Amino acid sequence: MFAVVDIAGFQEKVSEGDKLRVPTLQAEEGNSVTFDKVLMLVKGDSDMKIGTPYVSGAAVEVKVMGHGRGDKIRVFSMKRRKRYRRVYGHRQGYTDIEVTKIKATGATAAKAEAPKAKTAEKTEEK
Image (cartoon, rainbow, N blue to C red; front, side, top):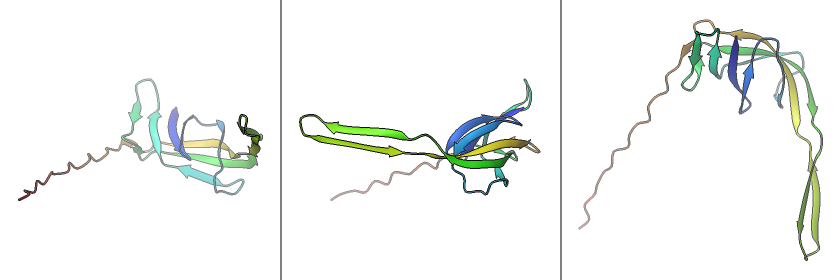
């Protein structure tokens, strides 16, 4: 069983027991976090639910293992023949998580509402 879930704006394929590194989440170390934006849920070869946009009734529960910061990325900018050079860096924060449970009770594909068509009103100019 696996699921494709939206975590902090990124789509991740997860199954129970997986350990992931995702962008920083606002949660304490050791706490549980539940993500309900499940895009696809696969229980077996023939049992697949694809959400439109999300699968309702499905959720992924994760445990926060820790927080940290990645390696420094150096950015170098220059303009030739102008004596302009700049070097700056950036360290992206991350959160290590472990998937503990994929909840799929009563999971159905939620239907997205069709966008309403705008009626064109014509005004006569005199």
